Image 1 (cartoon, rainbow over the protein chains, first blue to last red):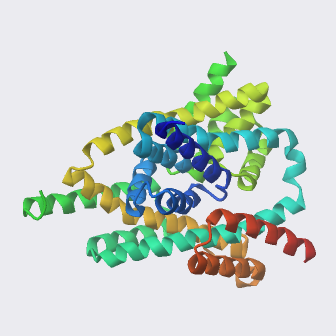
Image 2 (image 1 turned 60 degrees about the vertical axis):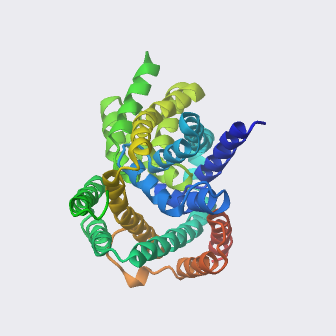
Image 3 (image 1 turned 120 degrees about the vertical axis):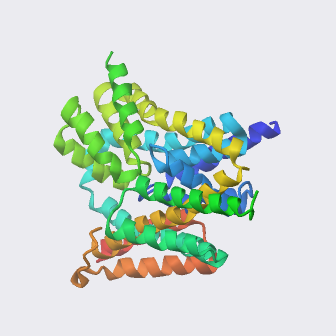
Length: 189
Length: 187
């Protein structure tokens, strides 16, 4: 197998596995992707992963799908994106196809419910764990504006259920103004 | 002909579902239940339940389910491709421009400023999952009487394993699923 093929195969396998365990909404994939692509494979920086998720978020469609496509494109261009899109699509496609034909049995099965109850608590821990690390990273950088954006977004998202798109747009505008001022002052080129 | 309708219906759902997850539900309801009548209100409720029990985005789960109901396995595949197409096209375009211009200070500044907002969004999703796990409801109204002690214990042990031993999240999901099955079956 050539090197490119090996990379594409690895992308497919990784996204397939991650998608297979994406219970509880798209954000669960962020810690999983960081673990796989940043820590284990070393293909992407942890910070950069957040940038990719930010861009994935600003497009329509499932977060898991969009983030996978961003990662695939970042690692191996167009083919990488196609491969990660397929890798993410296959598990729900296969599992739901099976479930369609047996869903009456699954819907009311108490044991399936027990498994889900247990997993829910585990997923909550996974998400909280990654939030700790990411928030610590942002606070450590010491940029007051970023810390304010973090707290403000948190407040708006939890207590006012403000739409994701508006929050990202707000952050983008703040980033634009902040960077524009710094360029004007000659702090950055 | 119905294949084209199926692709078009789910293409629109994919195209208009900003924000992921539950944001897509009203769209599916409107297009699949009201407009085409491909799914009954009862089936729609079932889709939500089943989506929570199976991995994968709700939009893809719903597409596979509806496609399968209407036209069998080929229908499921076609509908799923339809719902994924907008993502592929739009995110590819965004990726192309981002990686082309990411060295511009302004682009970098904007994306960097979006990081804290993304962290907040993940935190907010985590917050509602924690509430659901602990109190059985995602509403930010806490009823201490409904506190599920088993969930709290599983949560704390999982968090400990993740932080202390950097355990792979996949294993946490598998292990907590098994613990849930065993503990709740006995209780």
